Image 1 (cartoon, rainbow, N blue to C red):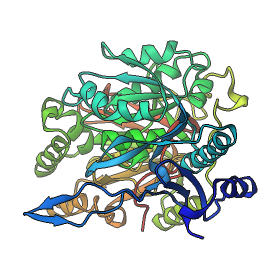
Image 2 (tube, rainbow, N blue to C red; image 1 turned 180 degrees about the vertical axis):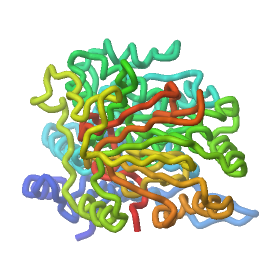
Image 3 (tube, helix red, strand yellow; image 1 turned 180 degrees about the horizontal axis):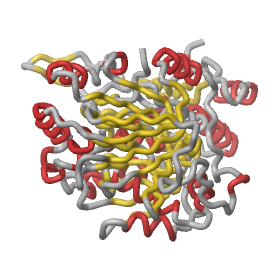
Amino acid sequence: MSADEVPADASAAKMAASDMGELSPDLSLAVGNNVTLTLQSDALFVNDPATKKDVRYCGLQVVATTASQSIPYYDILSAQISDSALILKYAKPVVKDDYAPSTLTYALDNDQTSLAIAEAWIEQLLKSAYGQAQRNKRLRVLINPYGGKGYAKELYNEYAAPMFEAAGCKVDLELTKYAGHATDIAEKMDIDAYDAVLCCSGDGLPYEVLNGFAKRANAAEALAKVAVAMVPCGSGNAMAWNLCGTNSVSLAALSIIKGLRTPLDLVSLTQTGTRTLSFLSQSYGIVAESDLGTDHLRWMGAARFTYGFLTRLLRQATYPCDISFKLETDSKQAMKERYLEYKNQKPALRPIGGSQEVIGQGLPALKYGTVDDEVPSDWQTISTDTLSNFYAGNMAIMTADANFFPATVPNDGLIDVVMIDGAIGRLRALSMMTAVENGGFFDYPEVEVRKVHAYRLTPRGSKDGYISVDGERIPWQPFQVEVHPGLGTVLSKSGHLYEAQGPV
């Protein structure tokens, strides 16, 4: 029997018999105008015999086609019954890397049995469409109107807002008015009123939000309960690249709608008298200067990082420092094996509402003390006068096509540290950096990679310079970092890994 021949009562019987996680291969619902909607293994098939409007091309009539289509479950946003009609909303490709919500409306028989069958069918559709993702998320949307090229508000309104509305998300929106405003908002936020904070910006706004949560007396509870996500509207959109796999506003919005609550390692960074949280990276040397030293070139977008890097590479700049670390491994082969082991594990998603054991708790105690304490005796120390680049990553992708930390995963309790000596030649250094995009960077022998639990860096040889934490400048002083396993919560596409190629 074909999909469009299945009676509605037979569909209901199959639905009742099917397991929640499995679909009958022929689970169909008959609706108005002889249309049949069938739940297939990975998509909703719309069997519509109506013909599309004839199209002429170069004077010739193109053969008319039916209005039938297959809609991947991932693209289904919502479905409901209103006034004896089934209203189905889904994300439809418009152009490359851009989706927009579209609506299908079908008449239903207005009797109790038919409507009950349709309601049950809708529930099965939404289970297939959302899986373990939370539906109808309550979103606190923060927009930095000055971030990136200054178009964050327009980008959100045109490409993200319609997607959230179509998915039935509840949105509470606010424009940030000054530097640090998002920190103040997060510190005072009613964490029981929202499922996620959406940062429409670059990476600076998530940094502010996380540090606002960190200021609360119940910091650990807030960080576990309220996920942090990004709608990419800045010049650096690393969080969106890692968690959503895209720099597209509409695709990132779809990823957030379908996002899985994923525990994320956060790190504490201490300098004299201060403690802040970092979610992305810390850098000293050529990368820090390429980022912060080109702030006046934000109009160039992501190209400013490349420009900054090349100009400093030609100078063969070096950055003396002392580095101490609590080492887990410096074997690249061991890192590859760890990555595969982690990849094959079952994802451990964070429950909605956070974890009971952290209710009311503040930030975890610092296991290794602060930068003002003595370096622990079991740490290793390196003193170098010729360092070119120190880069510590908690996520894999730093900018578009820059997978600097392929062995990094969201929740392993470790931070990946990359060090490169400045004694290598310009051409070799350029070759290494261009290999970042294709994944070859990791295996260069000149690239030292370590997985560490904690580290301390002390700059030398200059009275001032650039140290970058999540793209933000911090004082030119010694700093110490340690990892807090799974302290934060984000919305990710996979619920387990970053959207990046692992080490090969």
